Each structure stands twice: as C-alpha cells, then as structure tokens.
Amino acid sequence: MSNETSASSPRTELERELERYIRYVTLERGRSPHTLSAYRSDLAHYLAWLAARSLNAPSSVNGEQVREYVGTLAGARTTVARKLSSIKSFHRFLLDEGVVADDVTRELHAPKLPGRLPKALTVAQVQDLLDAVIGDDPIALRDRALLELLYATGARVSEVTEMSVDDLVDDQGKTAEVVRVTGKGRKQRIVPVGSYARAALDSYLIRARPMLIKNAKKSTPMLFLGARGGPLSRQNAWLIIQEAAKRAHLEGLVSPHTLRHSFATHVLGGGADIRVVQELLGHASVSTTQIYTKVTIDTLRDVYLGAHPRAR
Image 1: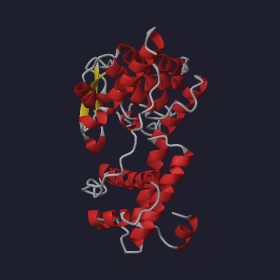
Image 2: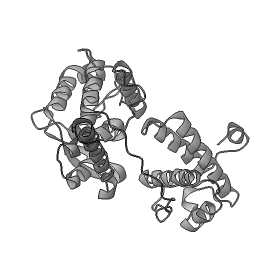
Image 3: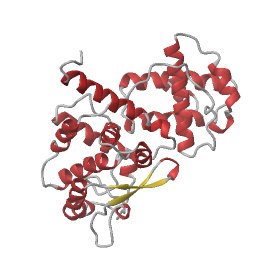
Image 4: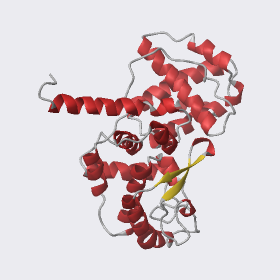
C-alpha cells in the first residue's frame, strides 16, 4: 500500500502479506519492474475494496467475496485476466505459505487468452551461463555449484537455498546421485543429480564451504552459505544468477525460473516421459507440465522449417 497509508495507521494483516508477496515475486520469480508495478496496483485496489467491507485478514476472505469483487472489474479481456491472475497468484501464495488453509480463488477462471510459453535457454546458452562462473576461490566455487544444481535438478531457487547439507551428501561424505528437494506445501521429492553438478558440489563442499563457515557467528546445516557464513538468501542467489547472465551476455533472458524452464524443456526434448518430468519438477498436476511439450514441439517445427528443403 502507499507510504502515506502506512504512516497514518498500522498496516493490516492483508497489507503485510501483500508486502511479503511482492518480495516473493521480486526475488523468487524475478518479475520485471513493470510487472511488479501491475501486481502492486491490482492488489492494492483489491485490498482497498476488501478493507471497505472490514475484511482485513486473509482468513476473513471467502470465495463469494472474491467473486463479487471480480464482478466489478471492467476493461479489456486481457486487463480483467491480468487482474484476476494477480488475485489468484496472491491467494495461492497465502496457501503455500501456510497463512490460510484453503485457496478461495480455486474455482475462479480467467477469460481464455492465447497461451504464453515459458522462456528457456538453449543448451549452448546454459553452457555459456555456467561457464561465466570461473575461479577457485570459495565464492566462485559456490556460485558454480549453485548454478549447476539449479540446472541439474530443475529446482526452484527457494528450494535450493533451503537445502541442507544432509539433503545431498551420502554416507561417505560425497554428493549423492539423488538429492532431497522440499517444495511447496513442504512436500518432498527425490531428484537425480548429474555428474557435472556432483563434481561442482563436491568442489564446493570440500574446498569452499569450510572456508565460508569460518566466518559464521554460529554453525548452520544449510548447504549454500553467504560470504559471512550465514545461509545464502533467495535475494543473493538471484543476484548471483543475474551477474552470471551479465558476464555471459544473456541479460534480459535469465530469471530465477529460467534454469527450471530450461531443465524441463531440455529433458522433455531429450525424450523423457511427461509424468517423469512432472515428478522431477514437483508439479501437483500434469497439466502444469504439459506447457513444456508445446515448447519442444515449437522447437522441432522451427528446426524442420529451417532445415528441410521443401518445408516452405
């Protein structure tokens, strides 16, 4: 909400959750300033409408009230769809964070619009991104291990920054061939880790993490550490990705979710079954994963049109 509102009266519970949500989509989802502005504007109007009806806590809002508000929305179909998407995303965040026990927007459906495909890097671009992190110092070893693990597992940035050493180390102290990932709703899944990521993680665990943890005020079991020895934050992980993208000349093409999208697209393109990819990504529904099949089909079409002498 506005600074004037914050200064004149204490923020409501919904307003505090809105600020947490904006931080989440900034750091975890890597949304552009334009998109963040739209989210904030859409949700500020929504919360103001709720406040006028003395609905100031997440638990006080029900599906009927949300439907009533949506009925007041006017404008182009794309505008209404965007506003409803903002509201649904906010309520899903509240559910995922354990603030509420139910998603009151679950039955709401936005006007049907042409599908937007997730952005994925090519295999060569991913290699450029990984190769942009070089060096044997603790920070460089950590950053390379972070990027390798994100691409190897398709995990969300928040899932990787919340990993502990025990989530990936075997009985011999080496990086295991599978890691335990804790996703939304605290649901755990087991994901394989390729040899390149395991080698980067071993280098980090043996040569870098012990050096970083020396700077810590207290010991921590978290896998990735900051320069001062504390757990690496989502914000710092995002900055690491951004810096690597800049050095690889991939600015504007990389977000915290880009390596996740690239993982899914490349694994499906390599012939993996969609149900397997669903499990690897931790999607509750296969319909969420199916969007990546459209990406690979489009890639095949582009290659065909460019390569076949009688394609056009």
